[in-house]
Length: 162
Image (cartoon, rainbow, N blue to C red):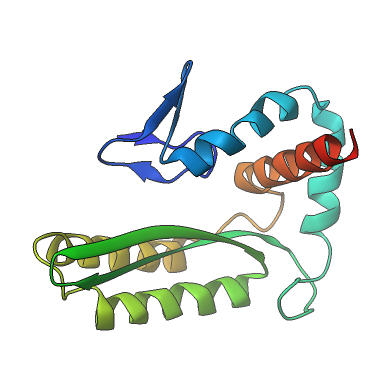
């Protein structure tokens, strides 16, 4: 399955294309201009900023790191409407676990009520949260996801200043 070039969400149906890149929706495609700008930033600058964030304090609870990206997955449904999403959180492991447990509980309570997608995506999103809880991230170095977020944030700051 394809992944959105901007937010890394899995694209199951549809999506939008821009050249060789594929996006989950128009909003991500519009933000895709950041990708082009971000590729111009030297890798050592991104790695330095990612290491600073990784070794810093959690933006959610203020606890000492390591800080990284923890993704939680959520689904909710109502009769013939189902919505699912991936939510990246830049935070410590403890806050990441809270987000994953919260979204797993949310999905278990509100995900089943849509036909047919609620019945299909609820177990998928719950399992994805459980895998994230079990696996975690490598605490010794920043993940590729954190570096990507740093790269896009830096590119966004460059665009705003120009």
